[in-house]
Length: 490
Ligand code: NAI
Ligand code: MG
Image (tube, rainbow, N blue to C red; front, side, top):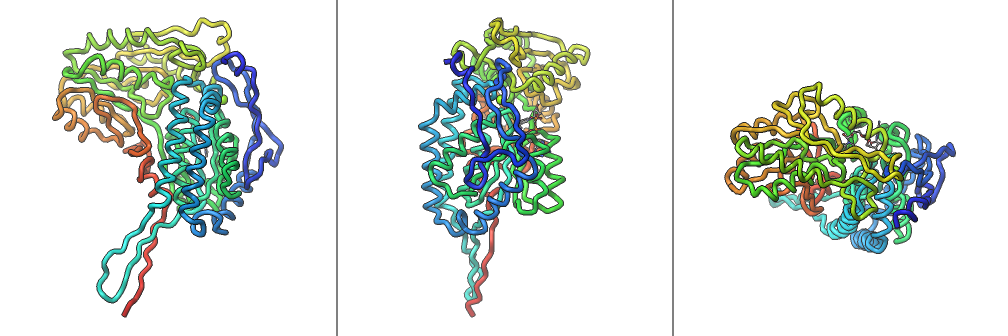
């Protein structure tokens, strides 16, 4: 399968107003398989003109009532269920495409695609349940609070969970009655385009769902300033997130931001150690560390510290790098040469920055992978959180470990980051677990686990990790306006 897939091409046009089109300029760019460096597809390089066409289509679909206000909720629900069914039917092909475009493991990609299907089912259910309220306002009047879609949404997504991040925004937006322009990351445009072909096939009206492929400044930025766009939802870097919020302030566009993290992973001495070690490792090294909520800031109670660091190194030494399509491989390549260089830069400067290397893995030995963007996993001991690798989001397989003395100490270190996306706590003491969980300033706290994010739950950051919430019913709020209708009965 791997050999065959490597030589296959996935060239595609983009999807605007129900049509498959090239960029107005005719420009294209290549999408690359990060395991081999091979070009697997050429896609349109969208710019302000293409975004303009897509936004016009989405605006027209919204204003004409082809979706949202004038469409029945049942019809929206039915179409979202139909998308889910098609995603399930294409599951294996979608998962393989995701591996080829972004480098993750096939088993993980399959789990992503399964969650994409469920996400559409989950929000298909919500489409018919967005009831309002009737607050009592006395005998001579009636107040109706109704939910209405916010309008045209620009959805800008990253490359680490390409289709899952797209679904996480597209499904609640469509359920709420919004129309959308999806801008996938330039590193991973392919599954978003497959989603467009599914949306087309099930019969979603033209213009409701559009995909513009291209680079951030060319194909993302124009959505921030186009007055026909009501809302931007973005997942990606802190720097771009700040820029988006600043730019959108001019038109007071609604903004949801899911940004980075430097998430503490706290192991207390009373934890069930085998679970804590394996959960900690998968919480840092899973998806090659390209996870916004990666628990890369590992904090370990002093009395078990020496034991834990030797076990972490042992588990890390079992990691095998290679193509995500190879079933024996447990860590894929990073998404791009730029991301590899960025992560290698952190690793290279770590020793002079006060970090001591506890473990460093090897590159894959397969000669077919020498052009791939691999970075071996590494574990670093840091006495305090001063070194850059203990403060900044790395987005690669790099773990730091620091000992702590007490619950207060763990909380202080865990809260020392500027981010606040997630935290994991390993302990068998319920009081310690809840005391720590409540004291950590983060949007998601796992107890005796790391990374689960069920679609029915909630996701989002405190502090520099973002604005707003996604998943569950919370995501719907981001795509709805509330209106008060007051009726005088006297
Ligand atoms: P990025 O923030 O530049 O890219 C994310 C998305 O934003 C992409 O679709 C990109 O095309 C778009 N974008 C970039 N500039 C834009 C602009 N001016 N206007 C509108 N859209 C724009 O992230 P990048 O450079 O790919 O990765 C750098 C670092 O960002 C990573 O190392 C990681 O630390 C962090 N990151 C965090 C993610 C998360 O899940 N929170 C996901 C991806 C990256
Ligand atoms: Mg790619």
